[in-house]
Image 1 (cartoon, rainbow, N blue to C red):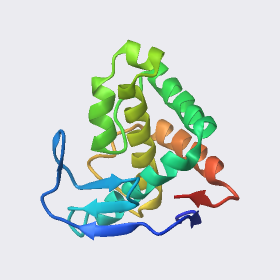
Image 2: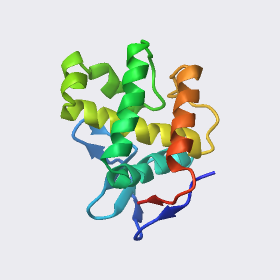
Image 3: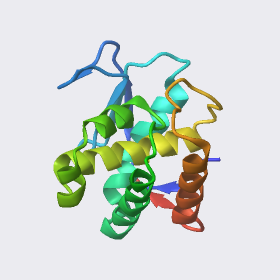
Length: 158
């Protein structure tokens, strides 16, 4: 079940065929405009919508929570974890270099954000299985535990 959310309204629009700087995408979030544009199919909607919604959560989560999530991800990487819980995080993970992690480059921070949003989509969308859920079970359990603890007992700001 999705945690309680609080914040100003977010406009949601449908626009098939949307693209970002890398090519075609299912959706995009415009945080300053408080707007989500979806170009996904109805079947993909739950997963994609939750992913985009959690971009707003990430923005307002604050550095302590974001840094704690980074710590979780660093631990996964030290264990050699492969795969992810969505393509947006997986391709970014594959593009990481050691210096990105050490220096917390933009590439690292974007990966962490996408990983967080994909994790939330995996946990809260109600989608039991998907070809993009490639992260091993032990790491899924760690992420579930982390996210449930992070949101426990408080509404999330969007």
